[in-house]
Length: 127
Length: 366
Ligand SMILES: Cc1cc2nc3c(=O)[nH]c(=O)nc-3n(C[C@H](O)[C@H](O)[C@H](O)COP(=O)(O)OP(=O)(O)OC[C@H]3O[C@@H](n4cnc5c(N)ncnc54)[C@H](O)[C@@H]3O)c2cc1C
Ligand code: FES
Image 1: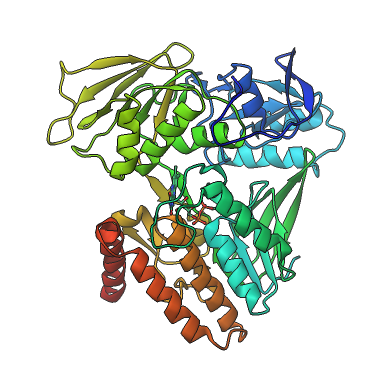
Image 2: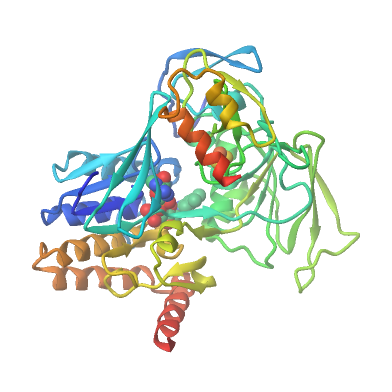
């Protein structure tokens, strides 16, 4: 569902990259928010709510509401409406609150001082 | 630790104007925004701006963002820090930030001598069954998805709210090739300007006044919206339901100022519905109750972009003046206040004038 023609806007050519949604390869543009690439592929259910397990999509698109938390490269609670897409990213739906310690212990080589770990901290506190 | 003389949070029209005004008088300014481009709300506004007497009226929002952005980027006194979210304000005057790049991020701190908060506003949600279904969005989110990222939110939309934002985004949905089934408005009259409403009507889109959403339907995603008529007490009338097939429901039911940093800093906050909810008390220099912390734009009360630019300019000048940098402050501030008065004149500014009067009264009462 990309906009092909628009009376006012033109969208600059960007580099196509492959990423993985629940293991399935998809294409998107480098640097666009992950949520935009998923939407373009028709995927709007991004996670399940922690208590009732209801499907959730995004709501604000600007990183304010935490509706869009997903697991990205093994790290939970990433706001995919603002996180930029890169080649080879592994994106998964998040069920529940997401386990930060498992994500860090689970082998992210860069460890706690990495940016991804910081995202996780932000999410846990807010949950 | 970064030690700017003036730190401005938010690079929308208010923040960019504040940064430029302070830098004009020689202040070293740090301007921070969580987005990758300066411009705030303007980066997604493809329509020509209203505000006939204000600056840049008749120019598209995206163009205003580009013009101001170029000035900010080329000013030697301004450091622009993008992709950086300000996280918190601490009692010793330190602000913490997270800057993202290439999938990693770093943690930064700043202790500015003066702080100008221009964080804008966020969209309000609306309570009805099914409002959490994927496919129910803030109208601004849909605008960002379409006009910044070039992606359609779905095939067929229902818009809630016939203020300017609801009307403008309905039009922009059509421009992007998304069908609009109806615009639903709880009030008995259309809130937005007549020019925007007639554009929508010319496209054959019905505007249902005195109507609201009863329920959003769908299994895993939005499939349909039930609306119903409201009585004079804004209660739904059973038997008046009407179903629309839709995979997109946009909420354009008002904005609330984004004021977390001001609460954290202990600024005195006042509830003024006309200005969008809780807003910081401030004096005529845009200074809050905490000396050295200034506020401007939608964060100080939801208004529009021209007044955001002018209040930003006042805040930037005042911050510079309080550092002894702006000897002509009085005269320049007087000019800016005169511009604000013009922008807030007439019927469209009535609500804002009422809100500001209330803010003044509350201040005097305490
Ligand atoms: C659909 C629509 C149509 C509009 N049409 C018009 C029009 O025709 N004419 C008109 O005059 N006005 C119009 N407006 C209103 C106008 O866009 C806003 O009033 C104006 O943008 C407010 O400016 P601002 O600088 O206060 O806030 P914003 O433009 O909202 O900018 C705030 C900035 O702060 C940043 N930010 C927030 N929190 C943080 C944080 N913690 N850390 C870092 N950065 C942060 C945000 O990323 C953003 O860039 C319209 C608005 C909408 C939604
Ligand atoms: S949709 Fe609101 S934080 Fe991502």
